[in-house]
Length: 238
Image (cartoon, rainbow, N blue to C red; front, top):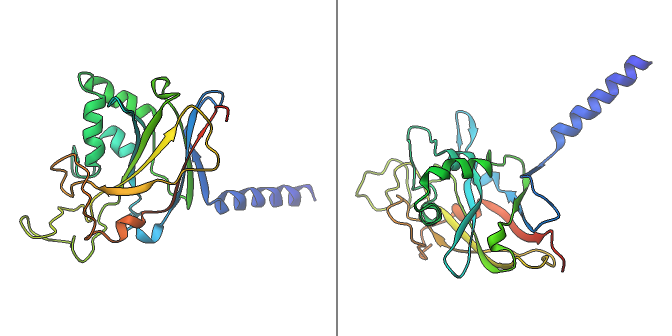
């Protein structure tokens, strides 16, 4: 009887782990202001390869009115700047590349260490909650929060596969360009409910500049990388 009980207990534990469709990422001090980002992944929008789905690469960063920039989350490939078949890929997240250039100007040697400390593998469950400590310099301010994301090989009728350089819609192997979401939040008080960011544009599909491109007429499924993005400030009083 004891053996049967233990076997049933193990089965329940295994089934519970396998059935979990959400994950929590990031470590924070809950007594200090932190940002909670809730994401729902749209796996139908991700291309598949030999090793399965290509999950989104993305970064989250803050900017204040004075032009200060602070990256608070990055997926591993971005943080370590390691890409399949390439040592660098600014076309993945070109708007953030420009912001990071301002953030680490004059201290490029610190970039890898700082980014690796706040990074994790791309979420692969249906939903993910990412917790990021708000830097002290940004506490008590109304700031802009950005999330830029990209999925490789998400071709469409304009950004087609196997186009030649110079062809309209040429994208190397990127597919559609990165998408940028933006919201404004007050880091000095806890959020009532959640804040839903808006899509404000794309990055350059080849990473040739760091600008926000507002023309999204050729973008289709890239806008559906996530079915939900919500921000909330926590760790401070209302």
